[in-house]
Image 1 (cartoon, rainbow, N blue to C red):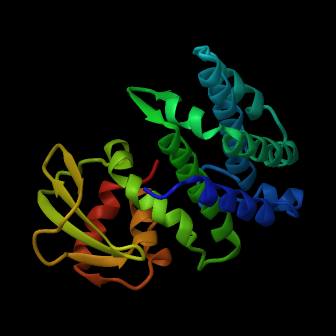
Image 2 (image 1 turned 30 degrees about the horizontal axis):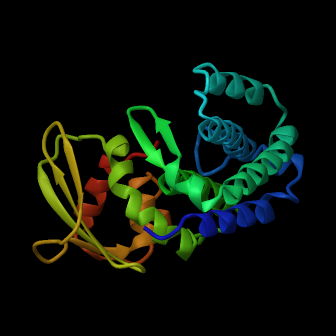
Length: 252
């Protein structure tokens, strides 16, 4: 996996440039997520920044973050107006990014972030922040640019974390088949094995000709439930396989 810090910094700059000049009406417009306005997306990024910064501070100090901290942050941000959500999000987003960049190389090798049933090292924790940041930035950008795509540097990191994400994102649909996928920019191979009640997502060599070939940026959006027909670039292969994967990865 490439280092995620530089792409995260790029994504922060991209989001801030996109949203800094938005007026109140634009902030209340629907984002790509049908249940969230642009302000809600920014609130999610901003509150997540507060939580990650506190987790980072506690990890470095050898403390455990209280279980009720994250819910208290969400409650606080849910009460903010659209304008305050947006303004505060840009501040906290920058602050957590600076805090991550300031962690020394020695500390980066020793910190471990608990995340539910798994524990992440520094690079993987930053990569998870990048994943969320890049996709939610796209959720905003695509409102104003129907041809918006994930940046190349972010895609290069995100595509190598899809196996972990698929554990939580994949939903069995009753379909039973194996779908081989090959991506470009960067080139990767994946196999998605479907049974009636499970999904197996494996990164690695495709044993046969791929059923689908598409850009890594597009496949990453597919796994995150953001590859509807209107936002799908050119691809080659079995269109029914693509439709099946859209159902398996409805978004989260």
